[in-house]
Image (cartoon, rainbow, N blue to C red; front, side):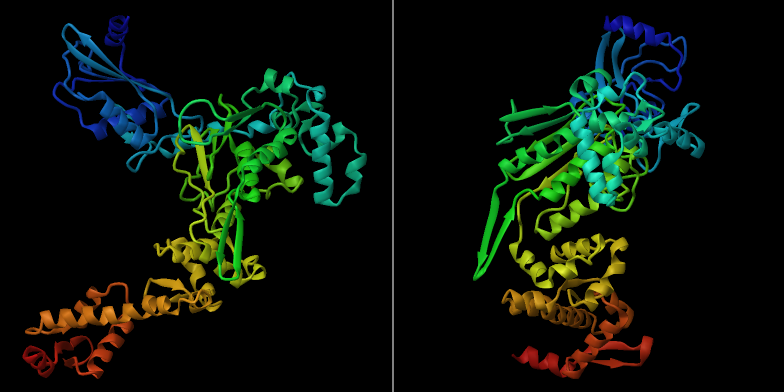
Length: 544
C-alpha cells in the first residue's frame, strides 16, 4: 500500500501541497523545517526526499534524516507541530515522506523571522495581502452565529435565571427581573430574531442540546495526585451550559485546596494553594477564548500544587505569550460580552492581568504558557509559595496602596525581587515606584527593594550588602584596570567600558572617591584625562 502511494506521488505535479527533493546525501534541517512551515501555511501537504523534482519523476534514494526520531523531536521543538514521518524502502533506494498538517484556521505559522510560503521553486515570506486573507479566516465571531436547528427549548431555565440575577446585580436594573426570557436573551444579543446563537448554547445549553449541536463545548475536570500516567483519581465531564457548572468546578478544586502556613515571630501567613479569583478567571478565559470550531474539550487538571488548563485552538491572531498581557483579542466576543454584563470579566474578556497580579501578591510563580502551540492554549497556575517574606513586604505596603497598583507595577516588583532584567515596556513605572519608596535605584539599570523592606524583615545588613558592596566592588574593578594599564594610563571611555551598567557621572564619582583617598591620580582634564595608580601607594604595597 505504501509503495502504491509513492507511485501516485511520483506522477503528481509539484504545487503548494507537494514538494519533492533528491537529497541524495543530506538535506539541511533548517530548510526542511521551512518547507514544512510553507506546506502547513498552504493548507498542508507532503514533503518527499529521495525522488527527482522534475517529471517524469524517479526514485534516486536519500540518506538524509537517517534518524527520523531525532528529526521529529527537532521539528516539534521548533514548530510545536506534529508532522508524520514515513520511510519507504523502494527497490531504487530509500524515500522519506513527511506528511504536514494544515495550520490552524486563521493562524499562519511563523518561523525564523517570516511566515513562509512557496514562490515558484523557492521559499518566500508571505505577502501582506496573503497574511490578511489568512487572518480574516477567523472571520466573524463564531459565538454570535446562529445555530440553525436550536431553539429556546434547548436552553436550561436554571442557567438563564442565574445569568438574569447576575446581570441585574451588576447593572442595578431591577426591570431585568420582569423581562420574558426571550426578551432578556435578545437584549443580551444571545437570541437574534428568535434564533439561538452558539454563545447561548455555550452559556445555557442543556446536556442534550450540546450533545446534538455543539458536543465540543465541554469542560472536563480531572484531579491527579501524582504525575503518573493512567486514570485520574477523579474525573467529571461537564457538557452543559457554563452557568450550570461554573460553581461546581471551583467546589471540586477547593475540596483539595490545602492552606500553606508560615510564621515568623508573631506574623502568621495562611494562604490557600489555589486562589479562587485567579482560578475562576482562568476558567472564564478558556471558555471565552477557545476555538469552538475545533473538536476537543477544555481540560482542567488539578495536581497537589498546580492547576493546568488546556483549551483547543491557538492564541487569537496577533496575541503571543510575550504580549498577552497587553493585547486584547477575544475570540468569542459575544460570550465575553455576556460575561461582562453579569460582572464575571472585564469587557475585553481577558482576565490574564488579574491572574498575574494574584500570583505575584501571593508570592507564587506567574502563570506559565509554556505548553501553548499552534493547536492549543495551555496555562499553568502554580500554587507553591516561594517567598513568604515578600508577602510580608506587600502587607506592609498596605491593601489600599496595592489596590492602586497596575499590572505593570506588580510585574516590576516581582522582577526586581527576583533580580531579573526589566523589559523596556515596564521601565516607565520605575520612577513612580521609586518615589513611593517601594524600590530603590542602585545603578544605571539596577534596582532593589527599598530599605523599608529589609528593615521590616530585620535584615538591614542584607540591604547594606546589596547597596553598599556594589560600590566597593565597582571601585575595586576600576582600580584593577588602572593598575593593569599603568604605563599608558586609562581614559574615562575605557573605564566606562569596565562598568557598562553605570552612567558617566557615576563612574566619575567613583574615580573621584579613589583619588580622594590617594589610590589614583589623573593627568589632563575632561575627556583627555588619563588615570594612573598612585606610585607611592604601589611601592608601599610592594614592601609589605
